[in-house]
Image (cartoon, rainbow, N blue to C red):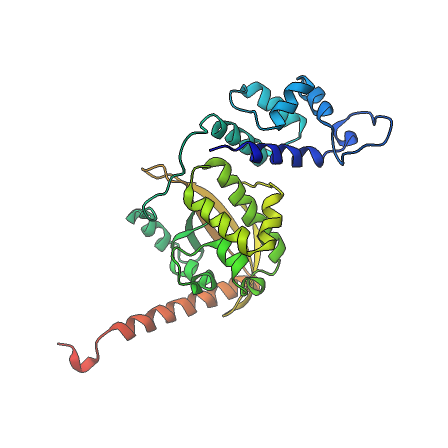
Length: 300
C-alpha cells in the first residue's frame, strides 16, 4: 500500500499552521507565499537539508531514523497524537506491498469483558474498536447509545451515526466538536492500521455521502481519545452532561479495543438523568423479557 499521499498531506497541513513567529524564527523579508512555514524553515529547525526534507514531505519516509522523525516532530510542534501518527505513517511506508486485510466478521468479546461491563451499574460503559464499532455495552451504556442502534447494521458505528443519521444533530449538543473528534480518531486509526480493508470501506462510504466528513478527513487531524466531557440530548431523559474516560483494553488476540465509561457528577441534574435512564433501561429490558415469556396458562 502506497501511503505517500497521506504523508505529504499530513506534513503539509502541519507545516501550514505554524507561523515563523510561533516557531521562534525572525520574519523574513518580502511577501510570503505560504500561510505557515516554508520547507527550508522546517529543514533548518529539524537540522536537515532542504532537499532532504522536501523528499520527506513528498512521502519518501521509509527507512528514516527515529532521531530524524523526532527532530521533524519537534520542528512542526506535533502533539502526542500527531507524533504517534507520523511514526505510524513511517512504519506503514516500510511495508508498502502488504495487501489490505479483511477480518472475518467482528472479533468476539470475551465473556469476562462482558461480565466487567455488567458489573458497572451506575455508569454507562461500552467497548469499541478503532473503527468506532460498538462491540459490547452494559445495560446503561446501550440505553445511552440507543440512537446508534436505530441503524439495523451491526455492529453499530459511531461515525456512520454521526454523519449519516439525521438524529445525530439532536443527540450531540455540540455536533461539530463531536464530529471533529470522530474523524480525528478514524484518521489516527488509519495510520495505525493502513491495511484494514473494513476501515478503508467505511472511510470511502462516508467520503462519498457526507461533505462534512470529506472536509474533516482532508484536514488530517488526529487524536488520542483518553478522557473529556460531552453533552447529549437523549430522546428519553433530555440533556446529559457527562464525563468520560477511555482505556485501552488488553486482549489475548491483540485486538485494538477500548473501554469507555461515562459518568455524571454527583448531585447534578445529569446524575438524576442518568439514574432515570437506568430505570428506563431496566423497565424496557423487563418488558422485553416479559414479551418473550410464554403466557401463564402455558407454563407448567
